[in-house]
Image (cartoon, rainbow, N blue to C red):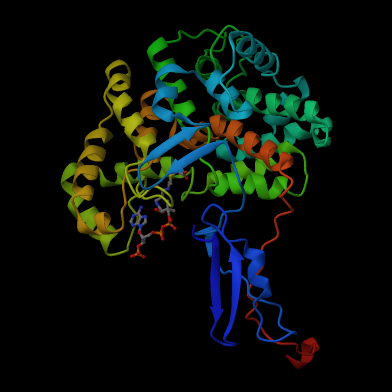
Length: 428
Ligand code: CMC
């Protein structure tokens, strides 16, 4: 049988090194033995943006980018979207197994009991600038919620950790809805324990000032599917931020605020908002060829296209696209859909995109559905953050239970000045 090792020859010294292979990886620390002389620090790998570096083992989510596959704990995403709900999929992500009826009821009851915000916290919300971006409010309020939950920092206590995981996942929709209502000068609506995770969120967003809201079950289900789709996506920018911050053993509120901040950027969860801006700017199907010429010339990006891992159609985009018609039938057509469909059709036939394996990602169609649900554009990334909270928290738990994990502390290749002497200001 072939040996599970890799032989590396250093042509500078003619020396050979044998390093173990595990799951198609080599331990980066094995490179350190490769030196030109005793005083040499040893070799490191150089990998900006972690393009080819695994930073952890994980049993939560599989993304098979070549084949366009996404599974949570082994279950295909399309099956979960068809048969599960947000509460159940969140349990699966958190605990690794689908719950029994009893476990499900207890989990849902525990979450519903933790969805309200402390009374003083509402006063804190009022201090936000009305026109501030709701994602900024969401990020700040996740961190601030930690100050109302000081026991969150006792991360060694496993039962305590579960308590705060439940508080964060349960209150994510409440924080999100309050971020929106704050910008509309509307009074807060208390969580409704009778409703589903998605239904409760819709009610907290859109109820009138007397708390009345008529829930459309089909739209509620469409949103629940969007929530399931966004729950986890292995080691992306936001999750890596969660793990990196969590590796310092800070409380989960602070770590999740950092993860949400990472998600905010337009290359990550902010892309859904950017897609809508892009489609609006294109304005008409006839303008698509000129827009794509600009993309190919490197003047702009086709937002909602491309992915670090998927080099095939993002399965989340496929599921969203298949539900778009249903939503538009109830909520009214979105005129941007025609532009998006045509843009996709033309782009997929262009060499530029084919050569680079650029396909629509989750953000290409999600914004149009959010818009049909009446959710304003500035809330789109918040909509991504709500369900992603459970993924971040499961990854955080996995990190803390993993004896291999250490505080995140990458290396650098220093190319700056050598030592030089300080010059007084008059001499510069
Ligand atoms: N439009 C035009 N060209 C693109 C695009 C795009 N959307 N995405 C990648 N490329 C080109 C890029 O210019 C590069 O070309 P070249 O080889 O000639 O330099 C090549 O494709 C490879 O791209 P990259 O930037 O090296 O790939 P990456 O893995 O570093 O970036 C990405 C991945 C998602 C940041 C990038 O595809 C992108 O910026 N997409 C648009 C933003 C977007 O939709 N983000 C949402 C991602 S899915 C939600 C999430 O999980 O965050």
